[in-house]
Amino acid sequence: MNKERLGAFIGERRRELGLTQKDLAGRLHVTDKAVSKWERGLSYPDVTLLEPLAGALGLNMEELMACRRQERRKEETPMKEQETVRGLLDISRDSVRRERRRSWQRLGAVLVLLAVTAAVAAWTQIVVKGEDLTEIFLKETVDGVDYIYVQMDTEHLLKLKCGSNVDFDAIQQENARGEKPVYHISYRWNRLTYQGELTSCELTSAEVLGTSRDMLGASIGLDKSPETQDALFGFPNVFCRYDYVETDPAGRGQLWTYSYWVEETGEVLLTVENILADTCADYDGDGVTELIVRTRWVEKPYAVYDMEGGEVTVTYPDTVGEDLAGRLLTDAELAEQQQEMLDRQGGESEEARNSIPL
Image (cartoon, rainbow, N blue to C red; front, top):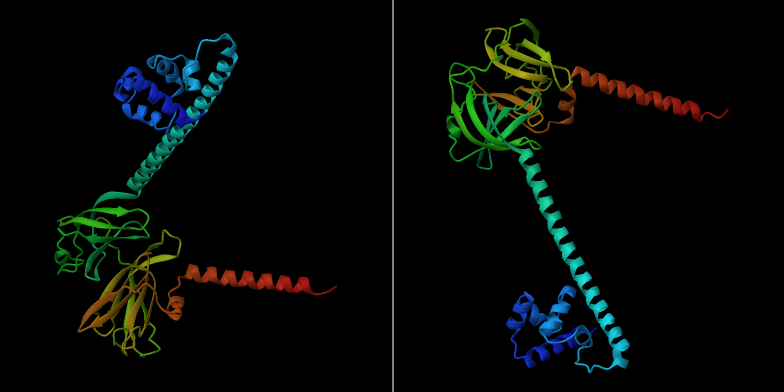
């Protein structure tokens, strides 16, 4: 059945009865916009509305489906029934298509809602709030933005951007007595990136348990730097005393706490914790030996200690040269490398033996 033809017939019959679109819509409990769409041939009436629509227009179903008034002749009955059936089938198919489109639209809306809900739920699990009593591992300013680093777990540092209400300059890594102050911090952080924002940082009078170390008292002399022929920071003889040692939870070897001191005076130049490996070299090419340390932290894997004007400074490069990287491997990593090399050599020998013709 043609939509335009049915729509024109509905409009014509409505006007013959002196009804407005709103009047007809009221009798069928639909909107006048729906009636307007029918009459403009934009859509069919719903199949459930056909009988009420015919009654409202003073027609029977055969006349509505045939889109014309008909005389009551017995011989036309089969033809009228055929037209009625065809019209009902056309409208029914159209209703099914419309309902199918609406179902897909509803399904799409549900899927979008579920996806958004899942994304929000996942985000709330990834970005979380935290609150701790902690020491400040490092302060740094990058491109005008202030950051602090605090220990998050046995392997990671948490990098926190300082919020506007945080007094970055007042935060201390070490006080005048050489002690590490404890701060109460609040923050938001991303579990995947170990980065976040520091929302508050208040100095406390607390002490972090477990920071004091029993001194083991062993000491070794530092090898002289091949570049400068001195031990460290321009001193001829510097010794390294390990104050504490523990197993690295990440399985890379031992974590050392070293104190570096001058043999002649006994002066302790610096104490460094969480060392996987260390070496001396003229890192910056200024003719004076620096201390290069391999740290336990993924985010700050290397530390370079220098002395300027009698004060020790530290920088944290992301990478070091291949030679230094090799010198900063732990015993466990060196053993693993050696085993891999032996395995490769063994595999190559086996391959060579198998290639000898019999």
